[in-house]
Length: 133
Image 1 (cartoon, rainbow, N blue to C red):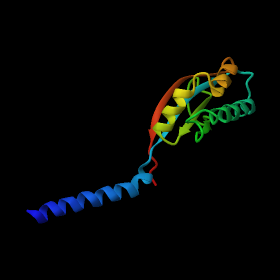
Image 2 (cartoon, rainbow, N blue to C red; image 1 turned 60 degrees about the vertical axis):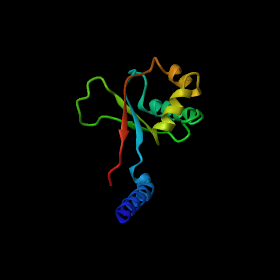
Image 3 (cartoon, rainbow, N blue to C red; image 1 turned 180 degrees about the vertical axis):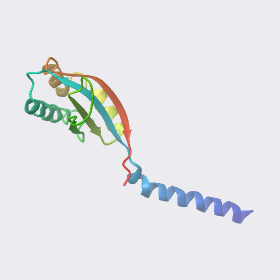
Image 4 (cartoon, rainbow, N blue to C red; image 1 turned 120 degrees about the horizontal axis):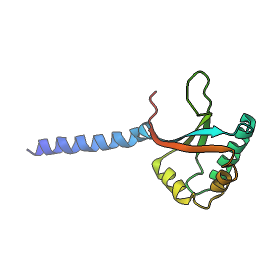
């Protein structure tokens, strides 16, 4: 009986230790995908500049320090009224939550409001991203 309890205890300890080592490999990123339409007068170059301005402002917001942003332009697909998909990438749900809590009234929100007439990114979805290598 004692040996059986000891074996279970050792198995639990080993499993716990392996999970701690493997945690970075199973970490999840947060992807906020925004489907955007840009005004006809709003060039792709201007869009890139505005996106860089927004990201710089977002990195000043608590929780946004490690955000990344990727722009996806459709090349050979029928996507309807979508000109660009913005992928805002957060390293964890904890950081994403902190960013969203601090977003109202932030410099990033000010950039959004400044260009709201030129860029409509009303449709968005939040995704959990797990990298498989």
